Amino acid sequence: MYAIVDISDKQFKVRSGETLYVPHQPEAEVDETLTFERVLLVSDGDGEVTMGTPTVEDASVDARVVDHVKGDKVIVFKKKRRKRHRVKKGHRQQYTQIQVEDLATSNGAANHTEDASTEQAERAETEKDDAGA
Image 1 (cartoon, rainbow, N blue to C red):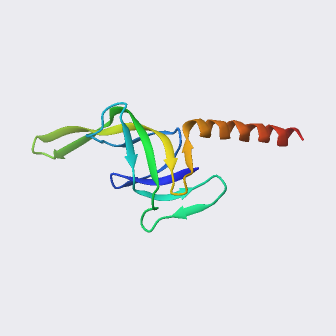
Image 2: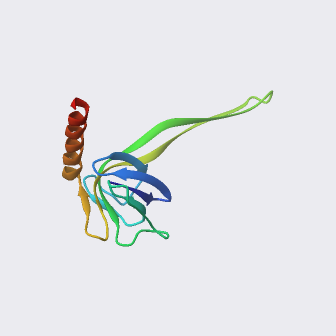
Image 3: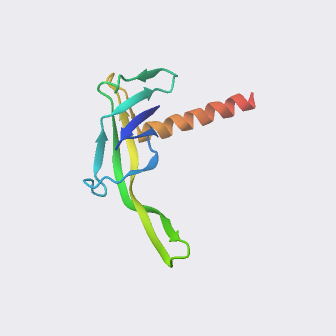
């Protein structure tokens, strides 16, 4: 099961248990749970896709804030030739690291982190059985 979520005007494809970096969320504290209501698309594991117009009704994504981090440094260097003019500036973008805990939809189906690991284990077992046969 996965969902496309709009977080700070950027779209992210998220799955339960996944860790990702999103634009800085200044109001969020570490280990706090955030709920994202702007879910644009939800797909269950059976290939059924629900698209929103613009969002899916009663769908949400719960995520836990892991850390606030800075990205790689971007160097901006300006130079005017023959004028002894040089300016060097650096910038580091701030990000919030989150871990998706569950995807909830209007039909009551929720995909928790434990469920995802169980599903992955079941898929691995069936693939082993199929490969062995």
